[in-house]
Image (tube, rainbow, N blue to C red; front, side):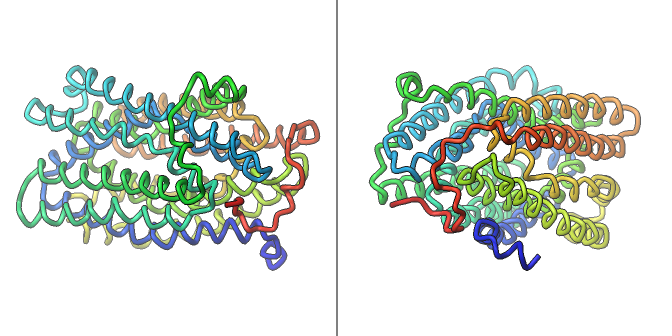
Length: 453
């Protein structure tokens, strides 16, 4: 492994992950405090309603949100490296226009559908208007342009700082709602304020950084006119959006399926288990955020980016095995301490789902490698096949075995998506000699990761 760290790009990936991880751990702890306050301050049924309201809005945002940050990283990074600032601005303008349009469509659609879906999800008439108000967050959730711009400009430190805003405010609001006995409306406000503030701070950082680089006009939204100068734009964003929509639907739809079949109490237990599992997989997500921009600077025809993916995947997989052991040993007392004995049933679910953690962490580079190779369609097909199989298993196994069935479906679904993505990535690697690349000397891999100011 000493040879691994001699690679400047590998060190840069770990550095950027370190920036994000330094605040993500604190954010995870604050998020757990918020959940604990809600779990203790509400009945299991109302706690489930809170999670469903939040999940519905985030699910709506995820379904309509384009992965414009991936488009920005994929095309603005080489443009800036080659001094083509005009093209980089066009990329960001197109992404921003798409974010605005999709956010508004998502909000309106979510609000129109909610009165018909609320009963299926366990949202009673008393809380319908609360859920409708929460849907106004959907446009601000479309913040991929801000994230992509900061990644391209190598400001992972700002992204790291922003990661503290939502959990900090949500945790503070949850404590106030708990001690003030404000009930479900108080906790909904805490979640709402935390989410809104985090999104606005991220946009503020992006505006400030683009202004500092003399690129503030990149935030003039444009779509069809700008896209005519970007021939690859629509094809890339539609393909990556479809892939992300399929994958993003995994969590929200899982919660909603469990709520529909087993009721709000089971949905709350499932949310606790999935939230703890999601927190445990953060190291892989942090590595992916630092890894993707760096391989965009490398030549996909060469072995180097593929070897970098193998190394980072192995490192994340080893960390995943350690985290699995920690969760198995400490998960039950953590749930009892944070949420109380009435939620201990969530540990039986977590104990089964946690084995998917090492798989997710070890295979996190696969999607980025496919995008680097221009194989975003292969990534989409792999995700559609895997998630479709997962949702079928989720419905059948949850109906047959209850919450344990939901956990088993989660584990099998993770195995499915890992295998499908691995097959697609191996095929792309075998054909790497035919891959196009427009770079010219940008793959030297100094590891600085910065773009010209």
